[in-house]
Length: 79
Image (cartoon, rainbow, N blue to C red; front, top):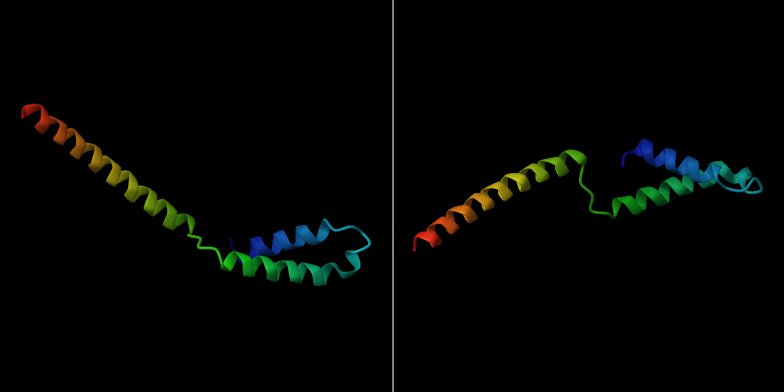
């Protein structure tokens, strides 16, 4: 999640507050942003690109495994 997304989410949270609290909206928005950044930084997240690379590696590995299983089945039939 990039900084802009975090700022947008913090802004939406601040805007969803009741009107009686809106006087401190800017301060709350900054606090929301800080809390979101802190919480998200603790998560072990990967980028979409890293995910897609690993997805491709897994697909190739699965194909190789299926091919090896087929070859093994052939050898077992011969024995």
